Length: 311
Image (cartoon, rainbow, N blue to C red):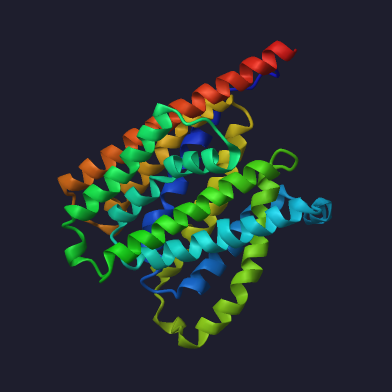
């Protein structure tokens, strides 16, 4: 097996990549207070594409044919446009903490999708991770105290929309998994971001007449720039650079950073009050995340062992 270079810089790339991915949840809550959803979403993916542009060659899009073209379009439509729009609409209706907990169910939902579509085996770890994820979200909803003072009037609808965004994120992961076997992940992310921007244009044009640009403060533009350049653009670059230099089991260990980042930054950026019920719900979901990390580690080690035996 080809040796991979590890060190503080590589670990910092993995850690910061997950931190930046996690920051998308609270930042989306800030962005939706001022910007229309489709305008904010379109600008986000455009900014992300500009960050990824140096790492891709757009002429390579001609190499995508048949099934690969449909997968690339599916990533742009569901994984990028669908995820961004649903996330922004959902965060209009719930608090940042609730949004963070719902988003933290992504690993468990990914595991279930892998079982359904890729015939992955059903194990006790996968089953328990899903149960913990559902339990954490239900705890927040049944005993919710933070939604009473939030701007949203329909917290259940907000949670459903964010969960739909989770499903879009899962589709991004699974379709990306198929494409990145033959194409660089930075290229897939960059081209899909460009395609998503094109898809956002008609809806952005539709919303523009009702958008009061003069009412946008400088800090609001800063939040939007961070939402695109930092969370999706720089986060992707750091993560892809990091995982290219480490074993899969090590990369999987950093998955737990994202939900922690989302939760902590919801308190910092959105100034939400800490409540013990938040910690209870998040702890259930995070235990499920840790179980899924364990599953990914086992799978990565089996793959690496197989590569060693084949050499």
